[in-house]
Amino acid sequence: MKLRGVQQTKWSGVLIFALAILVFPMVVKQSFYLTQATFAGIYAIIAIGLGLLMGYAGQISLGQAAFYGIGAYTTSVLTATMGWSPWISLPVALLLPAVLAFIMGYTMSRLSGYYLAMATLALGIIVHTLLVEWRGVTKGASGFFGIPQLNLFGTSITQGVPYYYLVWFFVLVVLVLSLNIVHSRVGRALRSIHDSEIASSAMGVNTGKYKMQIFILSAMFAGLAGWLFAHMSYSISPAAFTIDASILFLAMVVLGGSGSVWGALIGTLLIRVVGIVVHALGEKFPFITSDFEHVIYGLILMLVVIFLPRGLFPTIADWFESLAIKRSSKKSMIKVAAAKREL
Image (cartoon, rainbow, N blue to C red; front, side, top):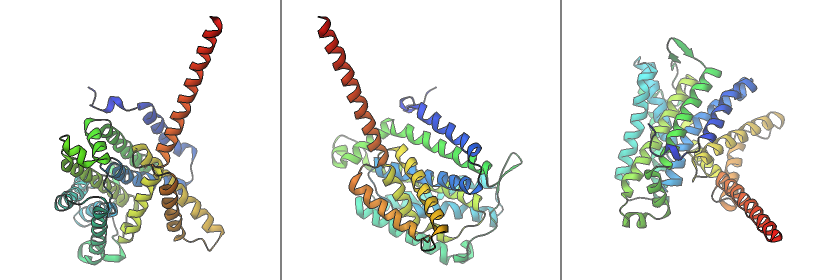
């Protein structure tokens, strides 16, 4: 039985991407690059959700790091403090960000655009403050330690190749789910909301319902990423869930293209490549510190907004499409000219 909308997805691209994921650890064996690829997968889950929210529902969020942190700390407390299995804590790590997103979306349903962005920014600040000050639960700014590793059918999933495959398995699930949404009736409704919310409402689209659903879904994706991050790192601290992280996720989506699920994924990979390059340069040039990354990300955001407002992936896709159209029209003109000569 085919899922509605999935049959419209170009599965060749998904299969090629899955094959690249499968082959990567066989080609690149250095632990540093494998760890970076694993982090890229965790960030990709958040970026895809944010891309759906921005590119299709037309809502700007600067609070994804808050949902990310809630997912991470939820599983940390449940497993390290209360002794739960990480797999049992997973639904809770998805549910709590979803509930918070529902409450926030319901109370701020009248907000949109930059006003919603400021509200989500405030949410991020509040959550980060709670993670620092609620020492009895979160252990405060010093961090939360002793998070257990994952086990599946008696086998430990440790850092390295096993965790890499686990993370990218979830990325593929999120990718397929998002592509299904985009190519379904819900996706068409979301695109109409992005183009004109007033026109969508006039045509009978329940704009508030769809925006709420995507907001909750993006929060759940961030919670999933937080769950994966916590059990990969074994220790977490509030420093990983600041406004800087939210801006980083925003840069990933803007760079790749918010109007494309693939764009958010590609933007994540490119941003991680930039981070690796900056790290390599920092080893050779002492004046290039970790703060230099933020300068690069800000510069990327500025240049993309000015020169590639739709993002990198949609712009390149349009360029290839126009090139294919020119080639096909040129071939048809040659055929017409040949037919005229025969006459």
